[in-house]
Image (cartoon, rainbow, N blue to C red; front, side, top):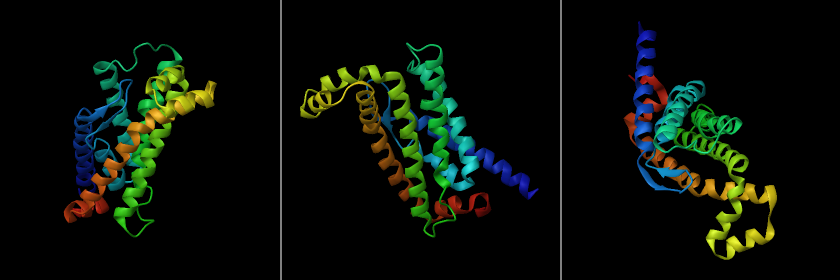
Length: 215
């Protein structure tokens, strides 16, 4: 009975946190014109699941969340507009499925570092950087043709330097890196702040360290 109770509690907790993450994902601190935004701690619930229940469960929850985000993106913001064939598959995988699956890696240092706040924060930071790599690859592959106009519209010394120094695939890669980092790095900082705040509350810290065993 104890195992059944723990499994049920894990499923319920995961459903609630995935739902919470979905709600927070539509509350945007700021959004970029071609996709990507800084949200109100939307990744924190998924990061919590990865740390609370372990990497395997975190990857699963990240995948479920990624599917939900893909559906929301397709229906609310027409994220796949203008794409067809293999490009749809690339975007679905890199911008949604894999990008959010890796967020579940937040628990990679649990049990390996004595300080749980450091372990959680470090694992989450790496997980979010892996998500950034997914978006970077997607942007490079699918949207590199926008690189020149993007840097031209900057109309500053940095944009002019980039256009005079890079071209072709290197320019496309730099564009994707700059564009995606402009929202993912603030998202990373906000997520880590959220994690540190949660870990400062003893009952929450014990729950994330011990999972269902804390109750």
